[in-house]
Length: 192
Image 1 (cartoon, rainbow, N blue to C red):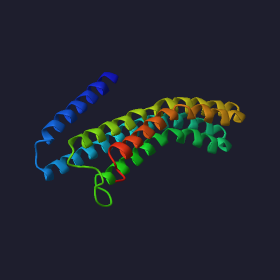
Image 2: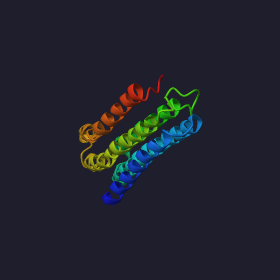
Image 3: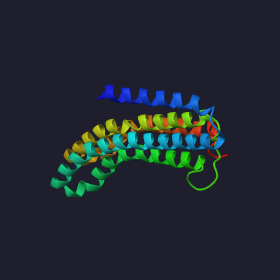
Image 4: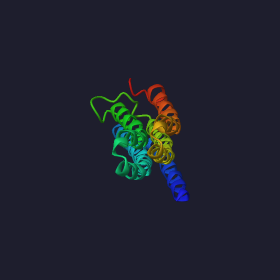
């Protein structure tokens, strides 16, 4: 499975690099459209990769949550908090996607990015990949959350500690999102 993911990423990066060189020689309107297409690809990659990570992580927390709340319904809110934690990685991908689409002029107005520069589209794809791939930390977060839910079912007083442990993998996604945000603001100039 990991081999296929790596092969897919190498193919995407190769396509992005090859299209960037060809784009530099085309007229400006076509260049703008192609850069916008790469921005859309960046958004799709960020959302798809982080979304898969979150879906897997949420399911890893949901299974023990269902079992614990069947026996102890009063623990539902604690189990729900732990189960929802892996969803935040997709929120980072969503925010990244909205910012990229706004910067490319595809969402709410005029483009602030230099759409004539072929490296802008390539950079956007790499931002999307970075946010998406660091969003895979949701899978590990789901594993920890699932164990925390099981522990809370046995001893409800450990719920707070279980939440703290489950938040730790989140820092990877936060760092990826923050670096992506810096690249978007300073490099891609999404805000003008």
